[in-house]
Amino acid sequence: MCEFDSEDRRKHLDFLQLTITRMAANSFVLKGWTVTLVAALLALAAEKGRLTSGAWLALIPLFVMWGLDAFYVRQERLFRKLYEAVVEKDKDVPTYSMDTRKVKDKVTWWPTVAFSPTLWPFYLGLLAVAVVMAVLASSQPGSGATSLEEKDADVQRKAHSVPNSVSPPESKPGAGQGIPSKRQKGG
Image (cartoon, rainbow, N blue to C red):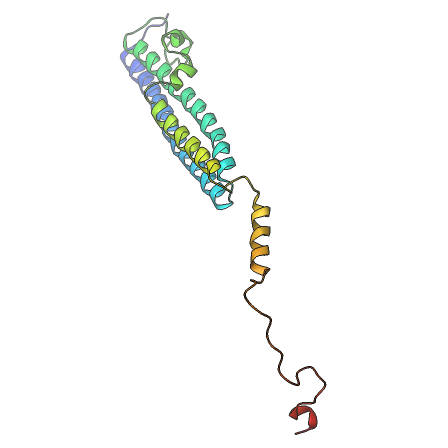
């Protein structure tokens, strides 16, 4: 039960707006980091010849970032509701209060926010890319069924094997039979 004067209310609204802006920026930055991490894990896995496991591994940061992004979007919505309460001169909101508990019933729970139109297209799109890459990589012969060490050993075996069509080099007459060369004779 607090009385607002116009200057206090304006300053309170500025604080709330800065917080809302920070929450929106956090959400944006998380999306950038999500793309970076997922792409880096997929590229690293492809380079190492383990695209299947790398694609499944990329789902871990994807889900963690999705949940964190949903948290920040919910926080942003809570502060928006608090902002609206201050604009409406709600007497239950004390001057300069940043406590969102008074408006928490007006905003859905964060798992529900995760499937809001602002989040699910982005994260489900990345999820689809990672799953499709994992499925395609696992369906190709030799792409993940053997380890990298087995592939390296197979390449080494092929490099050192001699094809059957090549015969050993013929020996030159006198080579290796104890006949001294001109140099050995002294001139």
